[in-house]
Length: 162
Image (tube, rainbow, N blue to C red; front, side):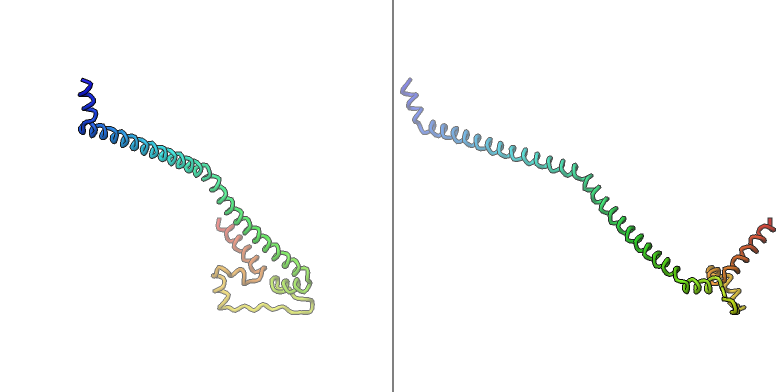
């Protein structure tokens, strides 16, 4: 029996069968290694993707706040510039009103004031007077006392209509 065993061991069919088994074992091991490498790489990639997503989610709110605050800062700087410009205009107006010549000029234009010894004239265009009263900007074109008396007349008419 030992001779048959030795003979089977060295037979071509046995050798081919052993080579096939060894080759199949190598292929199986190499596939297992590739799969292990693939799964390890996929796991790493998944972990990396999870970390990146977590960072994006964690930083989204602070970045949105930052962008919103920058917009608020720009808006407030614009308001500050406007306020400074308005303050400068008010300083200029105050300085003009400190000048007696400017005050006199404004009194003559706005209040129709005349100095002692002068004669004041108000020329009314009959065709333009009726047209101006219907315009919305008529109050600005007329003397202040005319607007005052018209207001009193309207209030009196309103009061008597009740």
